[in-house]
Length: 266
Image (cartoon, rainbow, N blue to C red; front, side, top):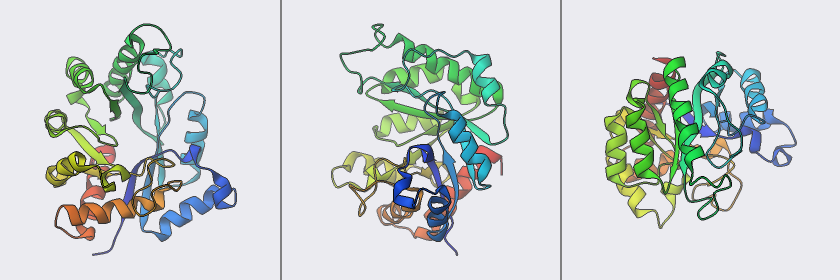
C-alpha cells in the first residue's frame, strides 16, 4: 500500500516563503516529495482570503476555506449572505476557521462585550455552512461548553465538519462525534506533555480521524521549534500509527478517505 497523505488544515498564506526561495511552488513540491497529495489552506480573515483563494486556484491539489477566526478581526462583522457569497466558488470547500477562543484574549475582550461578538459570528458561520452545504472548520480553546452548546443550538449536525487541532478531552470529542464531526490532530499530539490528547487520539474511530499541520505553527516532533509546513504531516501520521498500534499506511489511507468523504462526498 502506497503512502498518500492529506494535510487537512494549514495556512499557506502565512508561510515564510523566504525559506522556500520565495516560491510557493517549492512548498507544494516538497509536500509532494513527502507523499502529501492534497492540502486544505485555511482563511482566518477577510483581508487574507483573496490570497488563500488565489493559491487554491493555482494548484489543483490545494483547496481553500473562507471564514473569520475568533482571534482575528474582532471588529469585522459579516452576514450569512455575505459569507455564503464568498463561499460560492468551487475551490472553496469549507466554512471557517470559526469557533470560540476565550484563551487568547482572556481578561481583555477587544470589543468589551464578554465575547458576545465571537458567539454571534460563530452562529453566522454555522448558518452559512448549512446554507452552502460546505462543512465547518472549528477552532475552540477554553470554550468547549459554549462551542458545543452553539453547535447544538444551530443544528450543526446538519452539515458537520472538523474539530481542528484537537486539544480537548474525550467527553468533548465524543459529543462532537455524536454531531457528525471529524477529529483532526496536529503536531501537538506528538508532544511529550500531550498525554490527554494522545488518550483521545487512541480511541477516535478510524472513520472520523484526520491529520493536519496547522502550518506554519505547531511543527511536530522531531521538527518541533521549526516553522511548520505541509510536508511535515507525515510525522503526525507516523506518530499516530505507533499510538494506535497500526501501520502508517493505514493512517494515511483512512485519513485520506475521511477527507474526501467529508468534502467531496467520495
